[in-house]
Length: 203
Image 1 (cartoon, rainbow, N blue to C red):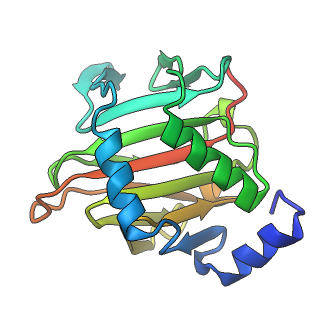
Image 2 (image 1 turned 30 degrees about the vertical axis):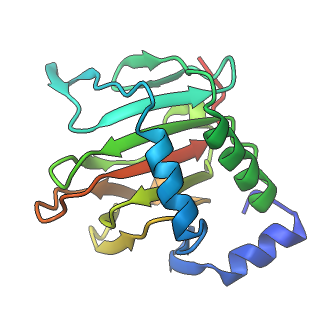
């Protein structure tokens, strides 16, 4: 682990270790507060960019907002995303995470999955801007969705339902050894907002 604060270490020990370097806090935010935050964030300036993958243009199957400190530009799929100013509630959550885990998160990517048809394909958060062995905190609000984690060598897949108000902390070699995804779940009719906090070096 990349932190030395005794309180942070004690909190990690109480989490559910889903896989090596994946720590799950099911009730990180109380449900009434999680519901209120979800409703607040619906009013953000959500975007649905088009990315070029294998020389083909694809509109992403979800909506997103990228927030962060100045100088935390972030590039993926050959597109540069510049941060919007912090929303007050998201900034408070970022500060809480940094206090809890002794981290230095300075940016967050928010994804709004409007229903079970919206999805995220297999990927790892391993961009150069995140540095070596990044720590990423993934906070979920709204509908429960199935999060999949796949080991790169064995291809073994672990399913983890992410609850409303939960936090999944990905540390160590999690992005080197695994990929993750959020598949389509047609029976899910409600929305989910996911916030992935990270420390970005900037481009």
